[in-house]
Amino acid sequence: MTIETKKVAYLLVFSLVLGFSGFAYGASDDTRYLVKSNSNFWKKSFGVRHQFEEGFTTDLTDWQIRVARVFGVELIPVKKLYVLPESPVVPDPADTDTKAKSARPSPARLLPSDQIPWGVEAVYGGKLLTDKPSGGAGVSVAVLDTGILRAHPDLKSRIKECKDFTSAKQSVVDNSCDDKNGHGTHVAGTIAADGGSDSKGIYGVAPESDLLVYKVCGANGSCWSDDIAVAMRTAAVNGANIINMSLGSDSESSLIRDAISYAVEKNVLVVAASGNDGPDIGSIDYPGANPDVIAVGAFDIDRDVADWSSRGSNSTTDPNSINYGDIEFAAPGVVVESTGKDGGYVIMSGTSMATPHIAGLAAKEWQKDAPDPDSATRDLLYKFSQDLGYVGEDDASGFGFPHL
Image (cartoon, rainbow, N blue to C red; front, side):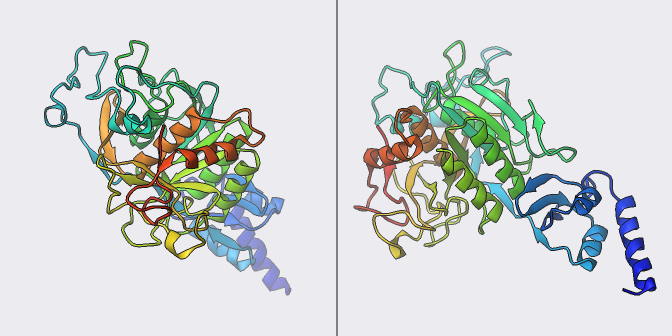
């Protein structure tokens, strides 16, 4: 290297370092990268959001990107995923239930139109004529989503842990998971809503289970794959039995794929939405398409799979097994009532809404005494499963609908 070239190089690096403090908080929305280096120099220069075996992630300015490429530093764009509601619906009790009570009885309490939503009723096999849902005690479900309304009367007793992985200023914020979107609060309610201390609220499938609420998606429903990957690993370390991810993307993230493997090695059962890109075969989203993940499609109250529910590639892969790109099950996901971020209740549709029905059933029936409780619980879901329209495995509903 000539003296003149060295001068240019040092000037570039000097400018790079001066232009940076921490990771690049002011970077644009689409400039997060995996820096394929473990050099302390580049870590100090760029700042580290999350550390991985193959390098670290950070938000970079256009200038930093140019400088990194001048020095031959490999940069891989970090993928974005999105939460998967098909359509939110504002509940109108007059139209949906003549006995509805969702008018505000007092400033302190809203009531649902149905304490046991049709989806929860379906998971229980229509047997909840007088009893309330129960089960899930001692089982922890990590909900990786947009956060939660911690003060919701039907959820506040269920929250065991609360972390924010979306902050621009630090990679993880403890005891912070406020939901600015509403999606995460809705999903959490389907899993673990316990009716509240007054027993007047709504119930989820496993109302005695604990929630590890990990906010990995922002108010607009977008989620960085590095935040998701770190949240998955954190959940596995912190004792999660089940991870629910009602989110997806058209392509696979290597960071999330590795995190799935890490979680499964620790006997964590991972459940994810199949996506809302149907009805074409092979329209399933990742991470649901990963065979180590239970991918869930959505059906309506008549048990017809929704047109928009993503399809797997089951008909083109080995029969009677789960392969890359296969749907595993389907669950209630159309016009689902659950907890809302305003302290009340809201109706939403999507494979996002179907997924927590399966996660909740897994929590309720968790095989804690088995050598591999995640595998044993997954096997049990197969035993509970009922075909939907087709006998055996199919692209729309996989092996059918598991219920009691």
